[in-house]
Length: 396
Image (cartoon, rainbow, N blue to C red; front, side, top):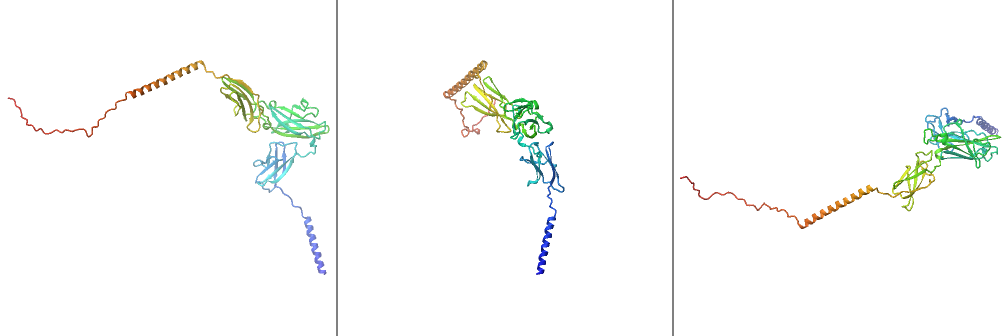
């Protein structure tokens, strides 16, 4: 009995020592193949350092929020993006290998614990006839003294290049420059003034970053920003149409009024001609069209984007005209008449000659040439010996 008791106590002591060893063992370190993940907002890059001994030769790629994946720059431990928001907290993730294993993630910008519901909401922008217009709504928790200001910059440049929009507007107020109140709910920027009036120039800005800041007596409120692709945001304007008659022909030509679709437009032309019961539509790629023998005719045209096929302009104003019927000049008519008479005379003479020859042939048919066969009809004579006596004659 005593021996059994000592055995039980020994087993309990051994189990207790094992548990203590487990509790005192250091935790297993979780290792990742990358470290020091950081954002460079000036260059729009996400960079990292490979962990010691980590093998990241299988390829790396990144993702900003829910955007498409971006491959790491060749030979470098970084990913480059076209833009970075300085207002929205966005999650950036690095993946490795074909199985898209998550190697690390980071949020940028860090949350400043500001009241984001006081920031401008629903920022939207569009381009129309050389002007960039943006509108926004006041934040639901913005106090009455909060007012907003809009800034823009080339997406390729940093925040130090921000420029303020000069023409603010609201639902019932139109002012120039920063307003001393919170009535700002939009702003318009003349792109021809700030970018130049030459479309498709080498300095053409493809994208801009729009930032709307807010501030009140209690201090600044979080900002709202958005990257605007100017070509995608452009609302197509109807072309400027002119028409004219060139004799009996109608000539229509037009000029597109879109800055960011230069050379990337097709056109739909509608032609309403009095000689046709229904209007005719033509899809053309050149900005002019000819109609022969037009008569009473009208035109209208609209643009369509070759980049975004569903993007169409409205119809232009319809223009009508009446072109005179085709009139042949007197000289041309005289020459044509003479040529017609001569041609008819030659044809008649030819027919007459043919008829006379045919008649003579029927009245006086030609005598066929007589060909006498010689074989079998000829008689051959051969000289025979003389059978008469020949007496020689002598002189007396």
